[in-house]
Amino acid sequence: MEERKTKYVFITGGVVSSLGKGIASASLGLLLKKRGLSVNILKLDPYLNVDPGTMNPFQHGEVYVLDDGSETDLDLGHYERFLNQSMCSDNNVTSGQIYHTIITRERRGDYLGATVQVIPHVTAELKSSIKKLSKINGHVDVIIAEIGGTVGDIESLPFMEAIRQMGLEGDPSDTMFIHLTLVPYIDAAGELKTKPTQHSVKALREIGIQPNMLLCRTAKTLGDDIRNKIALFCSVPSKNVIEAIDASTIYEVPLLFEEHDFSNIVLKHLNIEAPEPDLTEWEDLVNRIKHPNNRIKIAICGKYVYLKDAYKSIMEAFYHAGAENDARVDLVWVSSEDIKKGGAAKFLDDIDGLLIPGGFGERGVEGKIESIRFIRENKIPFLGICLGMHCAVIEYARNVCGLKDAHSFEFYRELKNPVIHLMADQEKITGLGGTMRLGSYPAVIEKDSLTYKAYGETEIADRHRHRYEFNNKYRDMVTKDGMKLVGLSPDGKLVEVVEIENHPWYVAVQYHPELKSHPTKPHPLFRDFIAAAVKYHKERRSAVENPEQNSIA
Image (cartoon, rainbow, N blue to C red; front, side, top):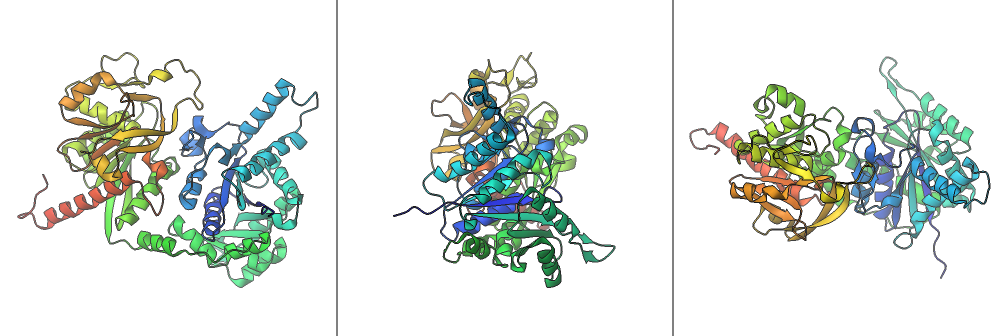
């Protein structure tokens, strides 16, 4: 029996960045999977960095880490969450990776003296990287490739040329080009304007790519007149001009797309027959996100709070956990530097829970430590992640164990009490890119712990991204004073999870649980953290409403 062809869908963007190509790609992947097809998806990033691992979060946002330790673009988080499947290093391709591969080959003499050029060598390597996904984990029905940046960018031209060439290979039904563009609403004129879309498609066609479908990002509903106008000037069938209207939650986007027959149009073009999608579970998720019965405040105290994309996976994990607990989670963004200047009580007095996220560098650490002290003393639910665990250990060592000079070796080399120290296998490493403890690692959890109650098992695995760890020289000291080391590496050498006694919910972990949270299956720690915050909120409200009957210890 002849194996079915793998089909390819290329998603490009125009006019401006941040229109939502990643969400559109993930939404299509979800809809096709719900129709019983096997799907894989990749992000093609034109920047010359090998990966985003060394990039400033203010420039690039979150670095998303995969099970295999790859540091990737944050859009891969959307892919994993929507498709509920794990990605690998092959799902994120950058210009830096492509050129590194080609130059390495040239230095070895693999090209036999030929002049190495963008065409055919770079484009061939790009096509090879795209097609490679069709061989991973068996047959793949559809591969979705998102092209980073916007049409017309100089650095993305080799990528555009590569996908143009793929469009000429095989049958026309083997590939589909979807272009995401902007249809802005001009308040002064009271009109939606189609010219940006027309010019964007014009630029795409000049490269040699005729889009088969347009996703029109808009704040207002597109009427038939606007849709027909776009279709006429962009040479796209009117039914293939799909409205991508602003949604209250990203998880509603696939449902809104499907109202316009999105997946049917794609499958018809690709000449694939598949049953209608069952979106009941997804519809229930969206309903729970939009109509919760509880409302709580969770503070995120960090130094990148003015760029929310730096904490994208954390935000999504809270939305997942909120839906599971029938609660709307209002995130309160608190600068750790403001805490240091104004004190924790000023910013955290009215919250129902605190999260200290991961990060690097000394700036803002003292504010995080002060925040943890406040919630520990006031018995407010707390979750610390990576650097958040380091800060929790430092705070406890200082304020409970009496080591006033306790700190992290990451920030100060001359320390009498470095309760956080460099991992042994990191001591001789000088390069920064891809050299941390990265990817999924196992841990053993004690049964008598909040963490075990969350996971329901003693052996777990989560994703890491760090160089520093709990200094084992201080284990006896902190445990004697009430901190519990409830999660260790299988060999017992690394501390993975800490909790404290006499607190309603206080968990700090070395790894990043947010990276394995899914919309319909929240990460256990986020789920239980939000459950504890909902309980705390209700008890606090009850105490305010009935002061003579209640008190919060």
